[in-house]
Length: 115
Length: 111
Image (cartoon, rainbow over all chains, first blue to last red; front, side, top):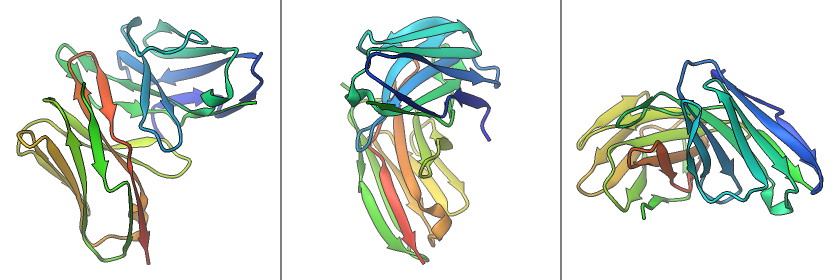
């Protein structure tokens, strides 16, 4: 069992719904990440937070809205999603140093289906 | 733009055999990671390689890094069924905490 938890594990939503994904890390790390994993595609980095500050947003559509209230919690707010947004959403954390990042530890993921 | 390519993308092999997965990347990087993902599960860190010539081993898996060739290998020795999984390599992009990922190698080991 990892020190990164995610809820819910499965989510089915309509295109007009609003939902949120939650991630919590118990490892004392200072960086947190949201990734999207789609079938037959490389893992896509969506957002990076370091010490609660967003340091990266990889051209993610505005229907995905991240929130990082502290170094241990990360949310991904979802609204008016499209069917192509169906994927496994993975949260990760790491201890970021001044010159790079240590190993990222992943949560179990949320399997999202958009109808 | 940093690109990471793995090959093969799919590998079916018999128990007891040896094989190697390759990870090529397009620009200089300081760190390379190998992860494992079991079906329906999350990613588990296997190795982090930090310098040219680095070699790390854990059980039947051995990873190496050649930064001049921009190549890392993951070698499997005397494969066993429990090693069936998808293996990913990832390369650190700059110092802004980003990793660029390969597409993954799905490994099936048959008894």
